[in-house]
Length: 55
Image (cartoon, rainbow, N blue to C red; front, side, top):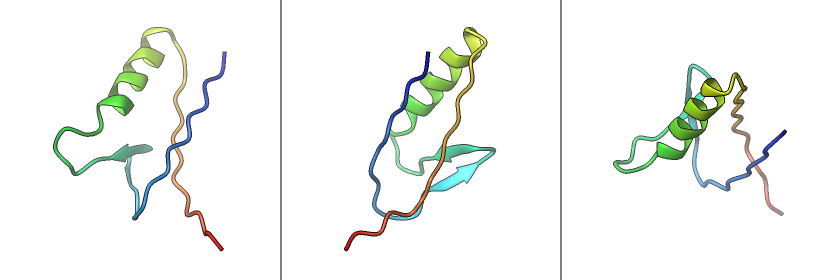
């Protein structure tokens, strides 16, 4: 099974050890939850941040 999630973000995403980092209080729990579930079921999580240029 493959789950693909795309989330728009304005600004520069900070990555640490391949995981997006949130500096805001109360944010970042989704990433932690997805990572824990993938590990529990011997799955794999991959995160990518890229700039999107709008015309």
